[in-house]
Each structure stands twice: as C-alpha cells, then as structure tokens.
Length: 567
Image (cartoon, rainbow, N blue to C red):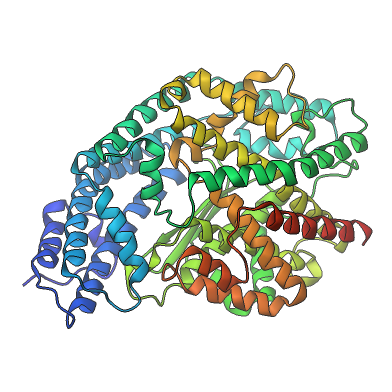
C-alpha cells in the first residue's frame, strides 16, 4: 500500500524519480472499469498536478533570477531525471485508458487530446524534449544578461523603453541605437542557438514519423480546429484589411511629428508632443490601480486578484538578471496563478498586467474542474481570456473609476491601445508567416542569414510604414528578439486569432458590459471541456480567419478611436 501523496509541492519537489515511480506503477497496474475510472482519474490528476507545479516553480525560479546557478541546476536536474521518466509513465497511463474503451462523462475532448498525444509519443524524443527546455533557459540567460550604460546608469534594454517615449528625438535615437547595438552583440550567440534548435526539431519530427516539424508541432499543440492553410488565409485577410489601416496610422503619425520619414525611434513617442503617460511610480501603485479596476469591473474577479497580491503571486518589476517578457503560469496543486513581467513605469505595463490578469482569472475560473485533462485549453482561447480583459477593463482607466488617469489621459491611453491592436495584427502575421516558412524550408532556415532575409521580406510586406534605411541589421534580426520563435514555435497565431475574438467580446460589452463579462466568465469556466469554436461561441464570439469578420472588428476599433478623439 503506497503512502498518500503530499498535499503540496514543498516536499514533493525534492523527491527523486524512484520515489515517484511507484505511484505511476500503482495506477498502471490498477484494473479499470466504469466503477473506478473516476477515482483513478482523480489519482492521476493529483500526481500530475504535483509534477506540473514542481516543474513550474522550478522554471519560475530560473526566470526571476537568470544568474541563480542553484535554480538552474535544480531545473536541469528535473528535466534530465524526472521529466523524461514522467513522460514515459504518462504514456503508459494514456494507453491504458484508451485501451479500456471507457469514456467518462465530460471527457470527450480530453480523450481526443490523449489519443493525439499517445500517437505522437516516442521514447527516443524524451531526451530531446528535455534538451529543448534547456535551450529555453539558455536563450533567457543571453537576453537577461543584456545591459547598457545610459547616462551613467546600468540599465537593461527594456528599462530604456521610457526614453523612446520622450519628445527629444535626438535623445530617443541615441537610446534606441544603444539598445540595438547591445542586442546585435549577441547576434552570433542566438544564431548558434537557433541552429541547435533546428537540428533538434528536425529530429523530433523524424523520430515521430512526421513529414516536418510543423506537422509534429501541430499535433503536439492539439490543433484540431484549423490548419496551416487557415493561418495563411488569416495572413492574407490581415494584409488586405489591416495593413492599409496600419499604414494610415503610421502616415498620420509621420505628419503629426512633422517628419520626412518615420524611424523606429519615432513609433512610441506621443505624436502630439505630449509627455509620456506616467501611470505609476512603483509596482505597488501598479498593483493597487489594477486591483481597483478589477474591483469595478467585477467584484469576484477583483477578489481573485486580491488573493494574488496577498499571497505574493506577482513579480512585476524589471531588473538586471531577470528573464525578458511576461507570462502567467499556473501552480496546479495550489490552484493559483503566478504573474511575471518587466514593468518600467509606462502605460504598456498597465496593459500587460490586465492581460496577464485575464490569464490568472482563467486559472481561478477553472478550479472547479475535476481532472487535470480538463485544464488542457488551447492557447487560441487562453489568449481570449487575456486580450478581452484588456478591453473589458479599459473603461476603468480613469482615476475616478479606480484607475490611473484623468479622463483625457485615459482616452489617450485607450486610443494608443486600440491603435496598437491594429498595428499588432500585421506584426503577428510576420511572426507566424516566418515560422511557416522556416519549417517548410528547414534546410534553408537552418542558416540564420536566410532567416534574416525572410524576416526582412515579410517586414516589408506587412509593415511598410517605418523607415529602417541604414538599420537593416536590426530590422532583419527582429526574429531573434521575438522569444516565441526560439522557445515556443508556432505559438503566436493564437494572439492574432484571440485578438479577433476579444474584439468581438468587447463589441458585445459596448452594448451590455455586465452581460459580456458574465459570458466571458462562463466561457472561461468551461476549461478544456469543449472545442475551440464552442469556447468562442460561449464568450459571444466567432472563431474566424476571414476578411469579413476582420473588417467588422477593424471598423469597431476605428469607430471607437474616432469617438475617443472627439471626447
């Protein structure tokens, strides 16, 4: 008789594989029937959640301080000694359940996922998947170590972002060039890492009997509801509908600034010469302001965020040695989210925390689901949770409604956000199209200089409004600085699709805010129990790739911008 599993990861995270393995063996040996399958799945869930949370806590430790060698060693030990063994043991349980022919209630989508995962599994890929996770950390270490000296202070490139928003153009350019020079200094190191990634990913696909890495990754991401061709259709819809609008935004900015051409250091400054928005002085003010916005939006969502503040589940400030970007992850045993970001006192930080807050609410809203397999949700909808939250919370940006600004500055912030959404779709298309090219042309893309050329071609196709003459090296290496490309391939189309879904949720909110928030929460609570199109429908949106749906969304955004400009 095995002892009970720990209730938290405090003890479990120190267990070696021989201490964990008997629990998997016990589940594998248990005869399955209709009478005990629910309990068996519950036991599997407890074990799976302990492993998931252990991995996430070890990973978080490597990102909050990329110089922490002990955290690095602990993470590497887990991915070397525990992760491959657990993957193999999980495969045995998946095959056992599938072979039983049992179909537990509410388990249709999880069974479909399990079939795909079991079909893709190859023991030979386990050490490769562990190695791939180490490449993630290596990339974070390269980026996390980047600093510059600006006006006597050592800063990360991220910490220079506020300078890009200042009216002094000469100063903006100096700061931009300083950051770009430092980033280009790591060009060769990131190129080397890319080549290793491409070699590894080719082998993953070959081992699994897939024609290329994209086919392998598509199945790994459990993409049943759309195809690569749908993505290309989406790119064309963006090119036809959004690129002309984005070009008008850039042209309007160029005229307002009185410039002959718009340069990269001109895209963040206020086009009317106003000082940058300063929503907060430190992360405590950021937390407090966003907390008040969530309270006004929905008291229960506000209560969720209060839990995160109370339990120190937020790491928001930028600092040397911290990994780039932002994320929200889930500690499954504790049923708690954790938000990581790099705030530097600009409005984008408010948007980022609202965004990651949407992910966090997804964790809270799915806590009632009984099995770990119900928490496997396509990122195409996970990102609706986050992007819709940015829009749903936007009416509360004024300080009079809980937020940070005067009415005029709140309107300005909303205009910047909405214009940013229109500018984002073309950028998203560049990132996603680049990845399709890379894995359709694996040999060519294994040469980083071909990647530079492809990125440049896509940049000119989708983002024609900014003048990069003389800065070609920085422009064409942009793929190196989009961390999704080296770390989580093909994870970016989700943002574009989800933004289209989020705009539809927001459009409903413009007519009925309370009703839209209620539908949003109901959709989140479904977790991974229904397919993507049904999740979108539950939230009041359509899962779509077409020009017509895109055109409707763009019109709503443009109409709102026009209204805000008149207010």
